[in-house]
Length: 160
Image (cartoon, rainbow, N blue to C red; front, side):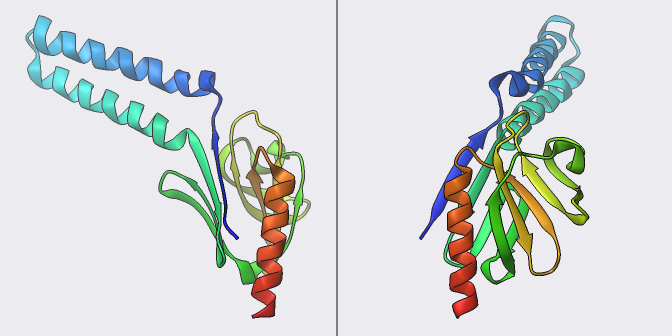
């Protein structure tokens, strides 16, 4: 019983970071070669590479439900919830105002604090209520399937 989903951000959204990063890299090359400023050019190329790499790493939300745990990740950052902690999961539209926008966010939804792992401008996903009183949100293109896997994980963890 493993569920895996990768949800990329909208291409236009990632281009907002990548295009300036590529332009910075080109400017750094010009500084290093054309203007005779090798140190400044190299630093700018390095900064550009970091911006482009971060846009690739953070541009995809990866969800994984395995027999023990839910993992939601933007690169190395994200949310882990053990199956025994899940009370209920259900499909719901993303309440972006409750969490203050998109991405990896903290907020309150209907009186319960929690975190959101959401992809910009995609409003479909799953609300996960935990036994500890938290309410988390996960963007998904297949919210019914994700909710079913999470509820099955919770049931199996309670049976152990």
